[in-house]
Length: 137
Length: 189
Image (cartoon, rainbow over all chains, first blue to last red):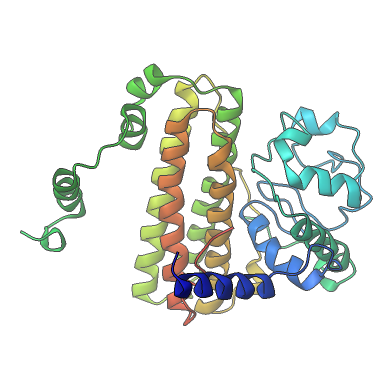
């Protein structure tokens, strides 16, 4: 590799590093909100869609919303959603709960998972989770 | 004749495939063309693949309903309405193909819900409708991206990736219509 190429690679590496939070950064709900866009294919905060609603998730027993059709696997999982169980599930849902209908490869980055969980915790305290459910049609 | 001057997308696709020598595997062609018998013979998909297809089907059915909501909202200008109906047509094609594939693989395809929860109260302008649609399309790209690596059958993964590309185009065009950068990032996640 030429000296110019090495310098370019080094510069790109520095740029990339500066754009990504360090592995030990505190969970950031703002970053988590951006990550939540990935979830919005199937989920919403305040109402059920293809996936169940997320308001009130932390502290809830998995598969316990009475009006949502969970997979049998999640209903019998005995999981209570907290930071640890959510982190494990979000890393690889189908490995954490084989048979889940959340057919998603997961979020491999630990920091991103922490940020997302921080967002779910924070948003629970906002009007987004206290407003009434939207109209059904 | 140039690829870009062909009279129809189908003709252009034929020309493109013919000139580049690009080929798809037998099962992917069967799936993408709706030839269920060939897809069944290709086999290899397990219960997990059926579950993945069914989850995707549920999301496609919701998207069809969402575009119907937008189309009936009377908030869309004629050109935008045409675009929305065009995208809805794509989602109908995706849903039809997914449902047929689930059935041929021995599964039971999920059905559209009788009612969907949509944030109707928040849709007060054309821009609101476009933002709503864009958020669904962005989510769909992430969902297919998260599903593609899970398929046991690589031909199903390839077919799902084909749908992913379509959803990404929808998202980009909706962003453009909203005056946003159509392609905001180099990598999707």
